[in-house]
Length: 444
Figure 1 (cartoon, helix red, strand yellow):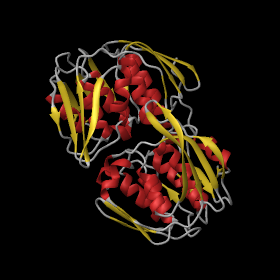
Figure 2 (tube, one colour; figure 1 turned 60 degrees about the vertical axis):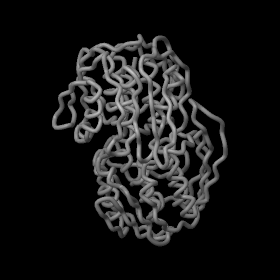
Figure 3 (cartoon, one colour; figure 1 turned 90 degrees about the vertical axis):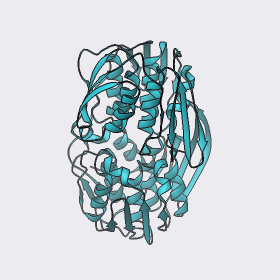
């Protein structure tokens, strides 16, 4: 049985605290959790997954692959067994992915290689996000689809006779790349995706563990990923590493709260995901990264963060692919730095769960931080340590990362910070409130 996800709904308020301290395991990675469920469901046989993130997004993917024909069972906290049949079939009803952008886009690619018809739906936020960037290359491969002006709901008709393509996505997106590679698993020949700027490569790392002929190589600042279709995937047991994006909230809280010392263990240290931590070091953050082994083909580190003075910097546009989910929390950290932090190349943030660029700017402005907002950039004029006024209310716009960023800001501001709704935090980090409380946070 796949459990429902309890969530903390309604407004929440974070109040300033004198200190945060503690050592916690990083929450399981959302991107890897989605892919582990999909590859296990595509394989012919039984796979066991440990430390799976049991968030609303991930359990939506679990329900979807079960509806497509896999046997999915939860054995205990984070422990799941998935038995695939080697092929998917048409589901009895629509596949509702809730708020899961990774889930819906990768599933459309994975389902495309089978003779089936499926309708993909989502919540209001997901239904506003662009899907043509996935549907267009799938159409070149021979997939038929109908949509609402390139948005959900999408009715997709797959085929066992897909064509291999050589494709350069117009936007840097790991979801687009992964959807094409997933479809390429069943295409006739070799499918290639060429990225001008390399994005996270969890699909390319995980697929060979299940027997796929898939790889990637650097190409200047970009990347070339390829997959040869036709192989039957085999089962694999894996443990999901810690999520650097979710770990960023506790790390940020430690950096902006006086006398704090916090460690997150088992964090994935993937070059396409660790851009935030490099930027924080450039800002003078007191961070220590200690090697902690490997998991699911990914390198792990323990990250320790201690409060101290931060300095504003310019964050170049080419950093964006390696930290695209972290800009809201980076903007909060920048508010506590000395001087201005300039973030460029942020156009893709406008197509996230919300217009994340505008929402981040509004969050800061509502709490007394001076900002400058452009079409693809944000300038945050830092208030210095302890200098953020706070006292405002953050409109989360159904965006989990906005909600958590606003609450973290309240821990270091002069006055409490409220968010209008916390329910969506469960989509990516259901343990957020428990973890923050364990460190000494005051969130009510």
